[in-house]
Image (cartoon, rainbow, N blue to C red):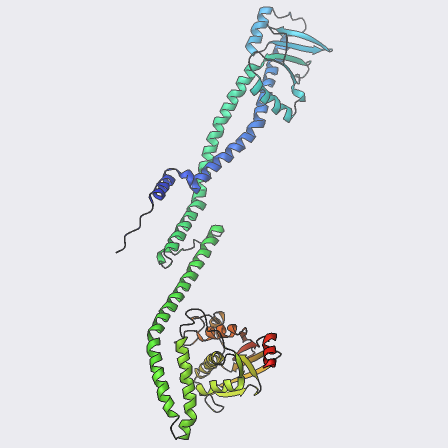
Length: 495
């Protein structure tokens, strides 16, 4: 029993820290970013609001001063006593109140004011940018005994007036307002971020975490069906990711199943390959004695039997070549295409008057530059598939015809294996030339076309299924001649 592998101590510590400190995860980062962005938005709102607060505070002071100015400037009213002026100015937080009439300043009330006024501001002329600059100037430069003179829009029916006040009171009011805004912004940020965090965690983060966990489990054991992802039916990006991942899991499991099937096949073949070679070697020794027989039929059949057994022995030597995803390098020679097709017909017992009517329409002078044994296997696979498709239907009225035709165009030789069978079904067309997938008959493994394509590709050629009107199947093979080398041609001339 294998011991369970423990994770490294540092990885365990990191995972514990991630659980205790959620900021390290996606959810925590989302929470921090939400709070940060809400605070940034509050700062952007605070800048114009503090300027507006300053203007409103000064407007209120101007309104309070306007009442005092109205009482002190009414016709027949006696001037305020000095003691009353000081108490009045102290009550409304000002140092002086003056009116402007006919271009002259008329002092209504004044306290112990210094000689110098630091800033003069007319609220009627302050634009947004100037108001913001003045507000931050008060926050960072104001306070203490600094005096400012303020004028604004006078009440209806009154002359324009000005007030002088110490900026420290304004600054303290603005600081209190800023503190309240900060606390309110923090509360809004936390509440908003919490709602956004909970909503996004439920809608996005948790499904992503679940999908990531499924990916991790699947990568650890792709064949465990418990790791299979079931799409939730969402119509967003996460739903599409779940669907694609589920499709990838299914495709990967099919591929692993095929690889396992190939491995089992290779193991089975390797077990029987040794005994089969010994049996064929013995059959080859017995067939050699048939050549000494006097029977004409035996003497005629013996060479073909010997050739067939020789091919079988050659196949056993390379029977695992497909399992290694490679074929032997073709030994190319000029081959009579018509004779090769005749040999295939004899092996498959195809005759012009048999159950399957066979016709060899290949021209007698057509030659192919190919490996004779390998190309024999290609034609044998194609003709056997066509023969089996034709005899699978037991209806006596069905026309069963198989023929091979060929031609040459320049340096390319072309052969076509044609039949009048039922044709290939859609499933076989989609898995054409794929091992263990393209077979349409019971017991078939679907290796014939895959091997044929590999051999044709090794010759630099192509094999394809041609579209044909009506029933039947047509496979076309194109084999180009080897390019001539000038050095070889010179050597031949010298010889």
